[in-house]
Image (cartoon, rainbow over all chains, first blue to last red; front, side, top):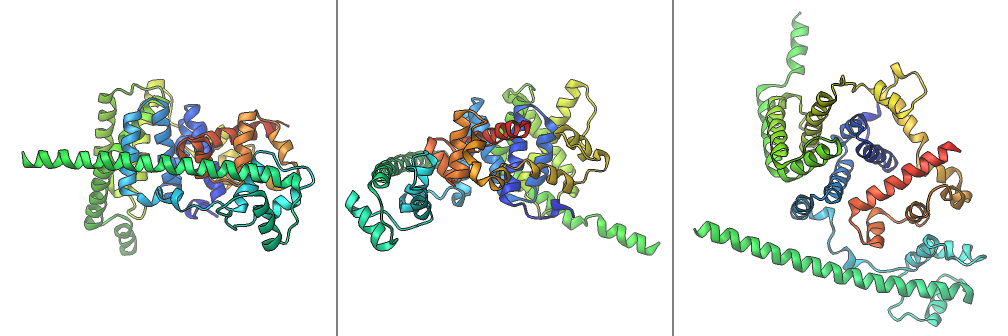
Length: 195
Length: 206
């Protein structure tokens, strides 16, 4: 079976990315060449390689080039960036429970409750309070949440809401900056045309 | 004989196919010029070759000429951008070999040998290569040792542990990891990949 003809799966892509990064970090041209073969037929891997090269360009101090590439990609491949994702993303009970796992903050003995919530996509209430979380957990999930779980959950939920609002603000600033730059460029190209 | 000739005609691209390939490549060169210049500069630097603006431009011109000359080898079903990047890399690989005065060894068996494949390297196929790589898959480590996730993570440093925990235990994707650290997705890809490589090396040692 020649897997070169098959569509890659996400695990194989990760392995190839590891090989590519190892190749670049060790200056091993064979590893890099091997991975580039697969980008011909796999557009997702190709986009990942572009993204990684942009990062290397920035890391090596070629900021200007990396920024131009990102701007061009925004212009030609808007779907790859999904700019309004932050605006649309709604935080869920699952997001908070996952975050507790990530930070190793699930209280001992509460793993089952947390696992249950981690799989849930119910949005967090607009008014967040300990009582409200307890009520929703009881009514919707039929779960009795103990205080030792409720407190870290509440703290984490507040942290996520705060971070989310910061990301929204940063996103809005970036969009504004890009718009201004585009307006400026359009203006200067108009002037050149008129000349 | 006529049958052989028919096959020959079928396998070599027609004049119109060649024209179409060349046109697609020309358009891609124009559209992705900035990307290619960036890729070339990154590769030149990473392979310790001079990466001045003039050098980058020179390699780019060479790639352009060579790519259009070899347009017949390009399959229009494949990504033109990826093909051009590969052509640029071959050019740099060639320069690199010239500088080191090393013979070109691009066969799969040589590459597999470098990765540490212990099987019959002379006859190693693409499929064997993937089998070998998959044995080192970090996903596999976690899948097969679900209850020992923290134990697995303990073999790497805290920085690597944190990003691997985000990805493999927390289930965050690259975009979410990038947002968590406030870095670009490319940077998140690289950081995660280096952590995976460290884990793989340490885990396989044990």
